[in-house]
Image (cartoon, rainbow, N blue to C red):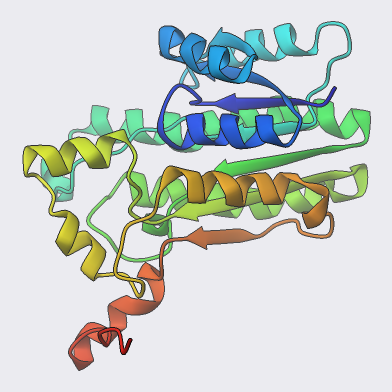
Length: 255
């Protein structure tokens, strides 16, 4: 049976990805710093749960050693583990916060790719999908998160070339504003307005975790067998709609 490792799989996009890949016939190994959450998702997909702190290189290496024991080199790695940050000026962003965001979102993703990707290349096959963000593709007041996600896109392209002839495909997905737990909590608390977020996209709505997960599952599948090194936005058209504000915004539905 094909094995898929999903980091950050305890909730949100990670959980949705585990469910989507289960439907495609994968044995799911759910890894998260929230072990209880990982166990819950593993129960849903009849998989296995593992503790993983992607800010800790040893934790990543321990997971790789556990997964690959018995020559079970995973067929798929999905890097969903990540954290967000407050939208503040550089003067108001503590260096410790900057370090934590970049250590998890960029460095942690890199080490997971390095450790699993090297083994996949030795096995002559594999697919890696990392979660980047539209924040890494535009100017936003996220001075740690945005650059970290831009780095994920760059290293995705590098690793796609590094391992392409070894049979390993490496791609990224850049979600837009997604109804994952952090966004839902921000909306409930009044810190963010769902209507305001939705109004900035061409489709006039937010993205669901399932929509991101379905895109990830496609990139992992044989249907995407000639696709590597891409960064695919799943953003309901946020990237294309912003410049329309200069002209009064995206037009209303004509139906």
